[in-house]
Image (cartoon, rainbow, N blue to C red):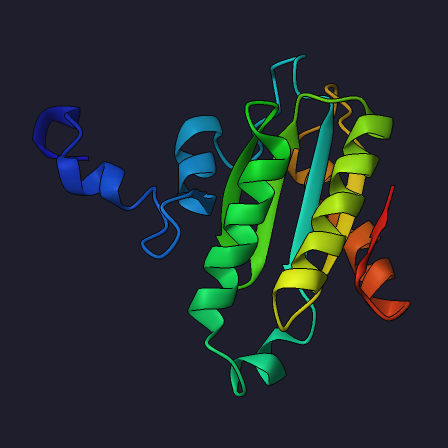
Length: 159
């Protein structure tokens, strides 16, 4: 915040990921607060995904190019039916305006397209958003699903 509580241009610049142009974690905290809820009933599902073995792969490939390709694929898959954010490093979050069943199909397509068009794979955790819970609670549920996929070898989706 600038003087007298007015937003400075640089304040909002910090809400966007420089590489991908996506909204970032700071955007969420700025908009909803630390424990904010996903208030819109339009958002039915939360997806958390990250790149499998990214630290090792980043030594062999151009990590930035892989991230940009993955973001492009996800944007194509969710279109206007969701909002995508870069949560940090190789982790991303999407809130989707689709049923859990439709979200699962979209994410399965996403996982296959990433595998077929990049040198990396992704793991995705999906949860039905519980609007009575905080964002953080929904997020941690989705992260647990994502890590379950990783423990089973990655390159898959768990709802």
